Length: 194
Image 1 (cartoon, rainbow, N blue to C red):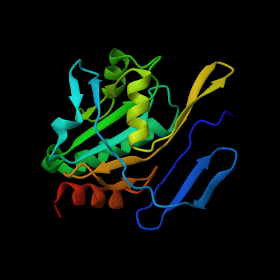
Image 2: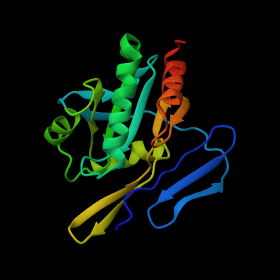
Image 3: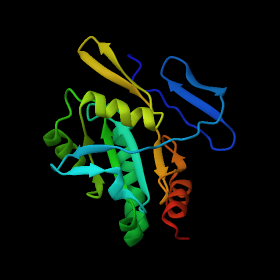
Image 4: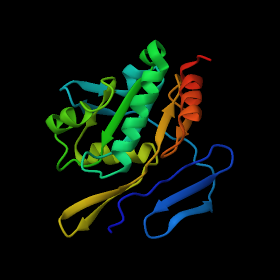
């Protein structure tokens, strides 16, 4: 089984990072706290519009890096995020949600539109050139790498959702397969509701 996901989980305050790999299970290492996550970007969206980080000023948002051919982590994360958005009710409209494709070769806007139609319609799919996506990933300290397989290729990638506050700074993260209650609490805190 090809290694298909790397989960990097920066824990604010503790500086711990965990990596999940099929061949190793969960491995934890103590690393210095990652600072300065986030930054300006401008990408296209799956519906043909331009998305600039400047227009998000004052609006909290969630950002996840993945790809449509992902066998497990991405659809699971998008389903869990969709369920959380639904549970938030009208408060979810006070926040933006993004699924950024790292697969610039296969993930066309049309494919992203089809893929995202399976999830909450408030999730937008930004796309870009390889250089644009690399720059955004670097700004968010997200990792991804193309991995050859016998049938083509897949991606190892960071599998957490970045929660950005109204000030454009990292306010927290949602871990892969985090339970619903903590996820909702984090989203409500970022939105500013109890």
